[in-house]
Image 1 (cartoon, rainbow, N blue to C red):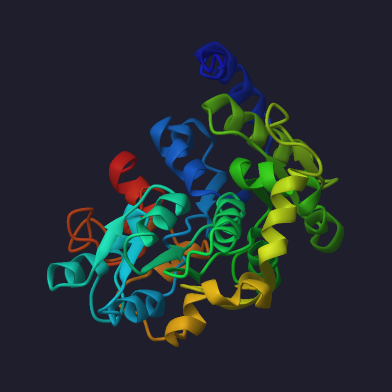
Image 2: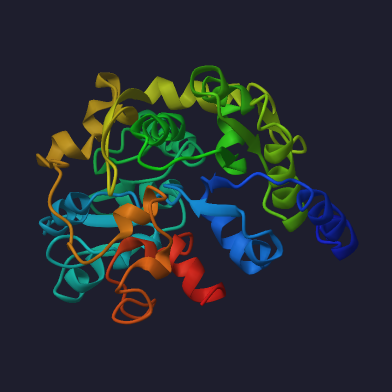
Length: 350
Protein backbone atom coordinates (compact mmCIF):
# COMPACT_ATOMS: atom_id res chain seq x y z
CA UNK A 1 0.00 0.00 0.00
CA UNK A 2 1.32 3.41 -0.97
CA UNK A 3 1.19 5.41 2.24
CA UNK A 4 2.78 8.53 0.76
CA UNK A 5 -0.62 9.84 -0.27
CA UNK A 6 -1.50 10.02 3.44
CA UNK A 7 1.59 12.14 4.12
CA UNK A 8 1.29 14.87 1.48
CA UNK A 9 1.89 18.28 3.13
CA UNK A 10 -0.49 20.14 0.81
CA UNK A 11 -3.40 17.85 1.71
CA UNK A 12 -2.56 18.00 5.41
CA UNK A 13 -2.33 21.80 5.35
CA UNK A 14 -5.66 22.00 3.52
CA UNK A 15 -7.38 19.99 6.29
CA UNK A 16 -5.63 22.03 8.98
CA UNK A 17 -7.02 25.20 7.38
CA UNK A 18 -10.51 23.71 7.69
CA UNK A 19 -9.87 22.79 11.32
CA UNK A 20 -8.83 26.36 12.11
CA UNK A 21 -12.27 27.58 11.06
CA UNK A 22 -13.85 25.89 14.07
CA UNK A 23 -14.12 28.01 17.18
CA UNK A 24 -14.94 25.43 19.87
CA UNK A 25 -12.50 24.69 22.67
CA UNK A 26 -12.40 20.90 22.88
CA UNK A 27 -10.50 18.00 24.37
CA UNK A 28 -10.16 14.86 22.25
CA UNK A 29 -8.65 11.60 23.52
CA UNK A 30 -6.62 9.30 21.30
CA UNK A 31 -7.17 5.83 22.70
CA UNK A 32 -4.39 3.92 20.97
CA UNK A 33 -0.73 4.13 21.93
CA UNK A 34 0.24 3.90 18.27
CA UNK A 35 -1.83 7.03 17.66
CA UNK A 36 0.02 8.75 20.53
CA UNK A 37 3.35 7.91 18.92
CA UNK A 38 2.14 9.01 15.47
CA UNK A 39 0.85 12.34 16.83
CA UNK A 40 4.26 13.00 18.34
CA UNK A 41 6.26 11.72 15.38
CA UNK A 42 4.40 13.84 12.80
CA UNK A 43 4.18 16.94 14.99
CA UNK A 44 0.39 16.97 14.76
CA UNK A 45 -0.17 18.61 18.14
CA UNK A 46 1.87 21.62 17.02
CA UNK A 47 -0.20 22.01 13.85
CA UNK A 48 -3.48 22.35 15.73
CA UNK A 49 -4.96 25.53 17.23
CA UNK A 50 -4.33 25.75 20.99
CA UNK A 51 -8.05 25.44 21.71
CA UNK A 52 -7.90 21.83 20.49
CA UNK A 53 -6.31 19.58 23.11
CA UNK A 54 -5.23 16.03 22.37
CA UNK A 55 -4.87 13.80 25.42
CA UNK A 56 -3.75 10.21 25.63
CA UNK A 57 -5.88 7.40 26.98
CA UNK A 58 -5.31 3.87 28.28
CA UNK A 59 -4.34 2.50 24.88
CA UNK A 60 -1.02 0.90 25.71
CA UNK A 61 -1.39 -2.74 26.86
CA UNK A 62 1.92 -2.77 28.72
CA UNK A 63 1.05 0.46 30.57
CA UNK A 64 -2.25 -0.85 31.94
CA UNK A 65 -0.86 -4.20 33.13
CA UNK A 66 -1.09 -4.24 36.96
CA UNK A 67 2.01 -4.36 39.12
CA UNK A 68 0.78 -7.60 40.68
CA UNK A 69 1.26 -9.40 37.35
CA UNK A 70 4.98 -8.60 37.52
CA UNK A 71 5.10 -9.52 41.22
CA UNK A 72 3.39 -12.87 40.72
CA UNK A 73 5.58 -13.81 37.74
CA UNK A 74 8.70 -12.90 39.70
CA UNK A 75 7.87 -15.61 42.26
CA UNK A 76 8.06 -18.43 39.73
CA UNK A 77 11.36 -20.26 39.91
CA UNK A 78 10.81 -23.53 38.05
CA UNK A 79 9.07 -22.36 34.91
CA UNK A 80 10.10 -20.30 31.89
CA UNK A 81 8.21 -17.03 31.43
CA UNK A 82 7.66 -16.10 27.78
CA UNK A 83 6.73 -12.46 27.22
CA UNK A 84 6.81 -9.59 24.77
CA UNK A 85 9.92 -7.46 25.28
CA UNK A 86 8.22 -4.27 26.52
CA UNK A 87 7.02 -6.00 29.68
CA UNK A 88 10.58 -6.78 30.83
CA UNK A 89 11.21 -3.28 32.19
CA UNK A 90 7.74 -2.54 33.59
CA UNK A 91 8.05 -2.08 37.35
CA UNK A 92 6.24 -4.25 39.83
CA UNK A 93 6.15 -3.36 43.51
CA UNK A 94 9.64 -4.73 44.10
CA UNK A 95 11.38 -4.68 40.73
CA UNK A 96 11.13 -5.68 37.09
CA UNK A 97 11.26 -8.98 35.26
CA UNK A 98 14.54 -7.79 33.75
CA UNK A 99 16.12 -7.43 37.18
CA UNK A 100 14.58 -10.70 38.33
CA UNK A 101 16.07 -12.41 35.27
CA UNK A 102 19.48 -11.11 36.26
CA UNK A 103 18.97 -12.87 39.60
CA UNK A 104 18.04 -16.16 37.97
CA UNK A 105 14.38 -15.93 36.92
CA UNK A 106 13.85 -17.76 33.63
CA UNK A 107 12.48 -15.19 31.16
CA UNK A 108 12.44 -15.45 27.37
CA UNK A 109 11.36 -12.68 25.00
CA UNK A 110 9.06 -13.95 22.25
CA UNK A 111 7.36 -12.24 19.33
CA UNK A 112 4.18 -14.33 19.26
CA UNK A 113 2.24 -16.74 21.49
CA UNK A 114 2.97 -19.53 18.99
CA UNK A 115 6.68 -19.01 19.66
CA UNK A 116 5.94 -19.51 23.35
CA UNK A 117 4.06 -22.71 22.54
CA UNK A 118 7.08 -24.07 20.66
CA UNK A 119 9.23 -23.21 23.66
CA UNK A 120 6.82 -25.16 25.88
CA UNK A 121 7.56 -28.31 23.91
CA UNK A 122 11.04 -28.14 25.45
CA UNK A 123 10.47 -26.60 28.90
CA UNK A 124 7.54 -25.72 31.16
CA UNK A 125 6.42 -22.30 29.90
CA UNK A 126 3.98 -19.54 30.85
CA UNK A 127 3.04 -17.05 28.16
CA UNK A 128 2.11 -13.64 29.59
CA UNK A 129 -1.15 -12.84 27.84
CA UNK A 130 -1.34 -9.06 27.68
CA UNK A 131 -2.92 -6.94 24.97
CA UNK A 132 -6.23 -5.76 23.59
CA UNK A 133 -8.62 -7.22 21.03
CA UNK A 134 -5.88 -6.98 18.41
CA UNK A 135 -3.75 -9.69 19.98
CA UNK A 136 -6.34 -11.72 21.89
CA UNK A 137 -7.47 -13.87 18.92
CA UNK A 138 -3.88 -14.99 18.36
CA UNK A 139 -3.53 -15.97 22.00
CA UNK A 140 -6.84 -17.85 21.88
CA UNK A 141 -5.80 -19.67 18.72
CA UNK A 142 -2.54 -20.71 20.37
CA UNK A 143 -4.41 -22.17 23.36
CA UNK A 144 -6.61 -24.14 20.96
CA UNK A 145 -3.51 -25.49 19.18
CA UNK A 146 -1.96 -26.41 22.54
CA UNK A 147 -5.05 -28.45 23.36
CA UNK A 148 -5.12 -30.12 19.96
CA UNK A 149 -1.44 -31.04 20.28
CA UNK A 150 -1.83 -32.00 23.97
CA UNK A 151 1.05 -29.76 25.09
CA UNK A 152 0.88 -30.10 28.87
CA UNK A 153 3.88 -27.79 29.55
CA UNK A 154 2.10 -24.67 28.24
CA UNK A 155 -0.11 -22.15 30.06
CA UNK A 156 -1.21 -18.52 29.66
CA UNK A 157 -1.52 -15.84 32.30
CA UNK A 158 -4.72 -14.12 31.11
CA UNK A 159 -4.20 -10.36 31.54
CA UNK A 160 -5.82 -9.20 28.30
CA UNK A 161 -8.13 -6.18 28.24
CA UNK A 162 -11.18 -5.07 26.25
CA UNK A 163 -11.21 -1.48 25.02
CA UNK A 164 -14.93 -0.47 24.90
CA UNK A 165 -15.57 -1.03 28.64
CA UNK A 166 -12.52 1.09 29.48
CA UNK A 167 -13.85 3.96 27.34
CA UNK A 168 -17.21 3.72 29.10
CA UNK A 169 -15.47 3.79 32.49
CA UNK A 170 -13.56 6.94 31.51
CA UNK A 171 -16.70 8.71 30.32
CA UNK A 172 -18.85 7.61 33.24
CA UNK A 173 -16.15 8.59 35.73
CA UNK A 174 -16.52 12.23 34.63
CA UNK A 175 -13.06 13.06 36.01
CA UNK A 176 -11.81 13.79 32.51
CA UNK A 177 -14.16 15.77 30.30
CA UNK A 178 -13.81 14.30 26.83
CA UNK A 179 -15.45 15.82 23.76
CA UNK A 180 -14.61 12.99 21.37
CA UNK A 181 -12.42 9.96 20.75
CA UNK A 182 -9.90 9.08 18.09
CA UNK A 183 -10.66 5.36 18.14
CA UNK A 184 -8.00 2.69 17.66
CA UNK A 185 -7.52 1.35 14.16
CA UNK A 186 -5.91 -1.95 15.14
CA UNK A 187 -8.52 -2.94 17.72
CA UNK A 188 -11.30 -1.86 15.38
CA UNK A 189 -10.14 -4.30 12.70
CA UNK A 190 -11.25 -7.04 15.10
CA UNK A 191 -14.33 -5.58 16.81
CA UNK A 192 -15.61 -3.29 14.01
CA UNK A 193 -16.69 0.35 14.17
CA UNK A 194 -20.22 -0.51 15.36
CA UNK A 195 -18.80 -1.70 18.69
CA UNK A 196 -18.49 1.96 19.73
CA UNK A 197 -22.07 3.03 18.95
CA UNK A 198 -22.90 3.09 22.65
CA UNK A 199 -20.66 6.16 23.05
CA UNK A 200 -22.89 8.64 21.17
CA UNK A 201 -26.10 6.79 21.99
CA UNK A 202 -25.52 6.64 25.74
CA UNK A 203 -23.16 9.54 26.42
CA UNK A 204 -23.61 12.01 23.55
CA UNK A 205 -19.94 11.94 22.53
CA UNK A 206 -18.62 11.21 19.06
CA UNK A 207 -15.76 9.04 17.87
CA UNK A 208 -13.79 8.51 14.67
CA UNK A 209 -11.97 5.30 13.82
CA UNK A 210 -8.73 6.36 12.16
CA UNK A 211 -5.52 4.97 10.76
CA UNK A 212 -2.03 5.98 11.78
CA UNK A 213 -0.80 8.21 8.98
CA UNK A 214 -0.83 12.00 9.57
CA UNK A 215 -3.67 12.61 7.12
CA UNK A 216 -5.73 9.85 8.81
CA UNK A 217 -5.39 11.52 12.18
CA UNK A 218 -5.91 15.09 10.94
CA UNK A 219 -9.07 14.09 9.06
CA UNK A 220 -10.28 12.25 12.17
CA UNK A 221 -9.93 15.45 14.21
CA UNK A 222 -11.76 17.43 11.55
CA UNK A 223 -14.64 14.91 11.56
CA UNK A 224 -14.90 15.10 15.34
CA UNK A 225 -15.18 18.89 15.13
CA UNK A 226 -17.78 18.73 12.36
CA UNK A 227 -19.98 16.38 14.38
CA UNK A 228 -19.83 17.96 17.82
CA UNK A 229 -23.53 18.89 17.59
CA UNK A 230 -24.63 15.50 16.24
CA UNK A 231 -22.20 12.99 17.77
CA UNK A 232 -21.77 9.70 15.96
CA UNK A 233 -19.21 6.99 15.25
CA UNK A 234 -17.48 7.55 11.92
CA UNK A 235 -15.21 5.02 10.25
CA UNK A 236 -12.42 6.93 8.51
CA UNK A 237 -10.29 3.80 8.24
CA UNK A 238 -12.44 1.85 5.79
CA UNK A 239 -9.40 0.51 3.97
CA UNK A 240 -8.98 -2.02 6.81
CA UNK A 241 -11.92 -1.61 9.28
CA UNK A 242 -15.49 -2.76 8.64
CA UNK A 243 -18.67 -2.09 10.58
CA UNK A 244 -18.81 -5.55 12.17
CA UNK A 245 -15.11 -6.42 12.33
CA UNK A 246 -13.51 -9.83 11.89
CA UNK A 247 -16.15 -12.40 12.84
CA UNK A 248 -13.73 -15.34 12.70
CA UNK A 249 -11.34 -13.63 15.09
CA UNK A 250 -14.20 -12.76 17.46
CA UNK A 251 -15.39 -16.40 17.36
CA UNK A 252 -12.04 -17.91 18.36
CA UNK A 253 -11.59 -15.24 21.03
CA UNK A 254 -14.87 -16.03 22.78
CA UNK A 255 -14.56 -19.78 22.27
CA UNK A 256 -11.50 -19.76 24.54
CA UNK A 257 -12.15 -16.73 26.75
CA UNK A 258 -15.11 -15.49 28.81
CA UNK A 259 -15.69 -11.85 29.74
CA UNK A 260 -15.01 -10.86 33.33
CA UNK A 261 -14.04 -7.79 35.38
CA UNK A 262 -10.40 -6.75 35.07
CA UNK A 263 -7.85 -4.69 36.96
CA UNK A 264 -6.22 -1.87 34.96
CA UNK A 265 -3.11 -0.14 36.25
CA UNK A 266 -4.10 3.42 37.04
CA UNK A 267 -7.80 2.86 36.42
CA UNK A 268 -8.66 0.14 38.95
CA UNK A 269 -11.24 -2.59 38.43
CA UNK A 270 -13.44 -2.06 35.37
CA UNK A 271 -16.54 -4.26 34.90
CA UNK A 272 -16.51 -6.66 31.94
CA UNK A 273 -13.20 -5.32 30.64
CA UNK A 274 -11.11 -8.48 30.86
CA UNK A 275 -11.08 -12.14 29.98
CA UNK A 276 -10.74 -15.43 31.80
CA UNK A 277 -9.91 -18.76 30.23
CA UNK A 278 -13.02 -20.92 29.89
CA UNK A 279 -13.31 -24.18 31.82
CA UNK A 280 -12.86 -26.25 28.64
CA UNK A 281 -9.32 -24.89 28.42
CA UNK A 282 -8.63 -24.64 32.18
CA UNK A 283 -5.48 -26.78 31.96
CA UNK A 284 -3.84 -23.83 30.15
CA UNK A 285 -4.81 -21.23 32.76
CA UNK A 286 -1.62 -20.17 34.57
CA UNK A 287 -3.63 -18.49 37.35
CA UNK A 288 -5.11 -21.86 38.31
CA UNK A 289 -2.06 -23.95 37.48
CA UNK A 290 0.27 -21.94 39.72
CA UNK A 291 -2.17 -20.29 42.14
CA UNK A 292 -1.35 -16.78 40.92
CA UNK A 293 -3.50 -13.77 41.91
CA UNK A 294 -3.93 -10.41 40.20
CA UNK A 295 -4.55 -7.89 42.97
CA UNK A 296 -4.62 -4.12 43.36
CA UNK A 297 -1.47 -3.00 45.15
CA UNK A 298 -0.30 0.57 45.81
CA UNK A 299 1.81 2.21 43.09
CA UNK A 300 4.74 4.57 43.57
CA UNK A 301 2.91 7.72 44.82
CA UNK A 302 5.33 10.00 42.96
CA UNK A 303 4.67 8.34 39.60
CA UNK A 304 1.58 9.79 37.87
CA UNK A 305 1.20 7.20 35.13
CA UNK A 306 -2.31 6.51 36.44
CA UNK A 307 -3.32 10.14 35.86
CA UNK A 308 -1.72 10.08 32.40
CA UNK A 309 -3.66 6.93 31.47
CA UNK A 310 -6.91 8.62 32.52
CA UNK A 311 -6.14 11.78 30.57
CA UNK A 312 -6.03 13.91 33.72
CA UNK A 313 -2.56 15.24 32.95
CA UNK A 314 -0.06 15.20 30.11
CA UNK A 315 3.31 13.54 30.82
CA UNK A 316 5.37 16.75 31.32
CA UNK A 317 3.01 17.62 34.21
CA UNK A 318 4.50 14.74 36.21
CA UNK A 319 7.34 16.03 38.40
CA UNK A 320 9.42 12.94 37.58
CA UNK A 321 9.21 13.39 33.79
CA UNK A 322 12.59 13.96 32.13
CA UNK A 323 14.21 14.25 35.54
CA UNK A 324 14.50 10.96 37.38
CA UNK A 325 12.14 9.25 34.90
CA UNK A 326 13.39 8.72 31.35
CA UNK A 327 13.67 5.78 28.91
CA UNK A 328 17.00 4.74 30.45
CA UNK A 329 15.54 4.83 33.96
CA UNK A 330 11.75 4.47 33.68
CA UNK A 331 9.87 4.89 36.94
CA UNK A 332 6.47 4.06 35.50
CA UNK A 333 5.16 1.89 32.64
CA UNK A 334 4.21 4.85 30.42
CA UNK A 335 7.93 5.63 30.02
CA UNK A 336 8.83 1.98 29.34
CA UNK A 337 6.59 0.99 26.50
CA UNK A 338 7.20 1.81 22.86
CA UNK A 339 3.52 2.88 22.84
CA UNK A 340 3.58 4.71 26.17
CA UNK A 341 2.48 8.34 26.40
CA UNK A 342 5.49 9.41 28.45
CA UNK A 343 7.87 7.68 26.05
CA UNK A 344 6.17 9.48 23.14
CA UNK A 345 6.45 12.90 24.78
CA UNK A 346 10.06 12.23 25.76
CA UNK A 347 11.00 11.20 22.23
CA UNK A 348 9.09 13.80 20.22
CA UNK A 349 7.70 16.62 22.34
CA UNK A 350 10.20 17.77 24.96
